[in-house]
Amino acid sequence: QVQLVQSGAEVKKPGASVKVSCKASGYTFSTYYIHWVRQAPGQGLEWMGIISPDNGRTTYAQKFQGRVTVTRDTSTTTVYMELSSLRSDDTAVYYCARDGVMGATPAVFDHWGQGTLVSVSS
Amino acid sequence: QSVLTQPPSVSGAPGQRVTISCTGRSSNIGSGFDVHWYRQVPGQAPKLLIFGNNNRPSGVPDRFSVSKSGTSASLAITGLQAEDEADYYCQSYDTSLSIGVVFGGGTKLTVL
Image 1: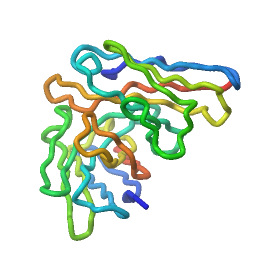
Image 2: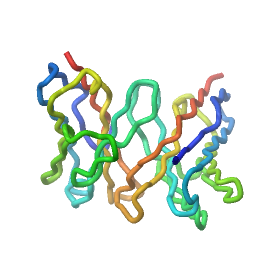
Image 3: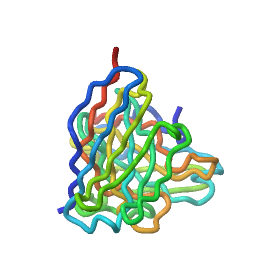
């Protein structure tokens, strides 16, 4: 079955960077885009960016441009999201999600990782 | 401030019908983009509920249905059950500069 398994919780200081991993299994990794979505405590969902596991091409939300980098390792079927220059308002649960319907606009997030809590505090 | 606007909360008694609205603008829902809906139980990841024109993943009952008109969409839940209590989010796409995927702010459904 399709699974997206994320790395564990992180605690970071302001100004630091964090790298969250998302290991995909149960399907052909290169076929489906992977997105990153975050959710601040008690808040709604916020889209951060997308990667094509096939060619590594990325697109980021304007809000995160210059601070976020999404990469993938096809040998381990893992996608990474790195967020730099962390601030307290970056404290959130970060999710990876698979776009399960090829060519659909908007993307259809048919499978989600379990989430990774990133806490930013001095 | 979410790009798509949802009511913060709705409620209904078991067996009743409730609707959750999702209001956008001409650059997203009004441009004809599909609206998808997700259900999230506190402490868990969101789950896909309905996508596009009433497409339901396996296991989602037909008590859940959607409609769309102009710049708005709605999720309807009939025969309300206690296990329907959760947060519901709508999602679409926005063509404004570098916005891309957009979500509603979420609606807390309480089953009375």
